[in-house]
Length: 355
Image (cartoon, rainbow, N blue to C red):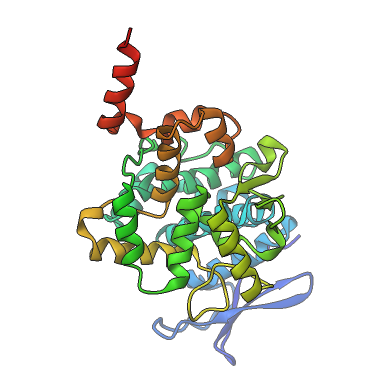
């Protein structure tokens, strides 16, 4: 079978490729590049620009029979194939996170042959984002995950960046005192986002769970939100149940009356729910307003909820259930910031030493 190759049509200033007798449009020739020279008999076909070659490989990737050989496989094709897999098999937030990082990675190294990719390329990509402090680990995870998948699927063996090391997981030690929580809520100018932040702290739910909840997830008679599809569904085999306080029941009832369809929590001028990025931006603005709350992010609400529950004497097994974890290990390792609560721990020590 004759190998496919992009070719240039001067009449339309465009690039095409022929697959199964059908001409497929790849794109216009970039205006900032010189036009391909007219071929003479026996000359090899002109090399397509990088943008065209990426479009070509993406098109070929849609049909496994058209995949280029491993020696010619480009980084962008590996990432596109993995994202197609991720979209079908991972949670939406997981897929979107992978997509953001991998698209950015391909802007720098997408046209590179995958087999020529080296850890140095990953390092140089990360160096273009000096502000990615906590995100650096997530970025490495995304790229390694794509190439580990390609290795496991037999597309590219061995994984050329297998030796790239991930930074250790950072523990978020910042929690809110009751006073700081009130300051944070009072600093929010609009009621919709104030309700969103209140819901996170009142339930201990993940930010993504509050963003996604709709009327269809609510059982007001039982006072719960219930998700059949959630982060730990595969491990637990159970739905995720978020238990509501009386205040949250009333807030949920009010929002259900206002929004019987779609997300319950949405921006003041939006018909859609809050997005991951909009929440991140809103917390950045809050940190600028309240400099003493440096380090506070959306997940701080969840950490504060768990820590306060333990301080209030709620058993660790019950806290794990409220947080939606499969066991108590995550609560012990990541959420139980009791060591930093000196006053509480001194009281615990006094009770422990009492005769």
